[in-house]
Image (tube, rainbow, N blue to C red; front, side, top):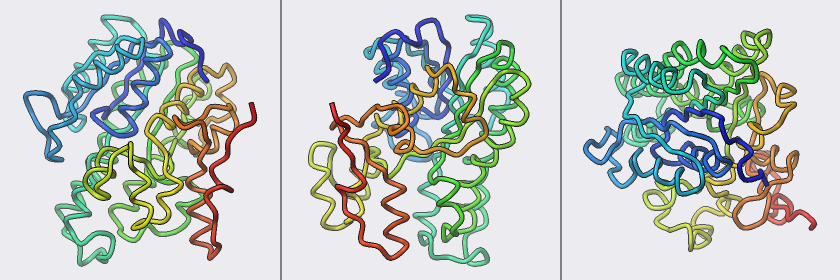
Length: 315
């Protein structure tokens, strides 16, 4: 587990930290002592198009501070370049550096769920919804990198983490809907390209995917369970047995951020389960779930058992 205070003095920006993986990443960076700027569109005064008023960036910032870091909430629409530019200028003026950039902006699930799920062909899907998905999941990332990377590359050792849903190995298959497929594969290519562009500046870029994440929306909207009784959903979704808490992917990022040899991962697509085995951290229940390994085995026609993909490290 990452030592408390290991990131003291480090400045992080977690873009899109209202909920889910990015919120947990922000909290875990805070637990390691970092100052974490958290951004998003849902605040206590304004709810984004996603429509989830129960999670806000102010709450995320408070969780970061409670964990031991310093959380700073900055309302930001990452499609608005002026807002992103102002955000980076604020970080620059306050600290003169940016050490960690986690780009987890998304917010597009409601678009494919409301458009027939993943069953519509390209020419059947709603064009406006599809293009909005790409703006939320791809264009936001490009705009954020455009303004944040000049600050991050000012000092060697900077780390960029692109967050997506699916590893490069898994993405060899078609995700079933063109816009969704493109939105989820783009961060892998961004990390690959940024790895090339950042290497000579002493910085590192990776793409990271959680497994089957027990996010707020997955629990309360899709499966109607809570973190406390999530196993009740396994009957309706057998693969959910291999799910992981958001903290697990958060611990993946802190492991990367505290690794003096993190450049060995430059340009690669990584998963939380893979990094847990490498660095030795566990999920909140003390196990190391390999979500993508389990899913790929199931899709290959095997009958994977949870115990074979949810390891318990020896003490």
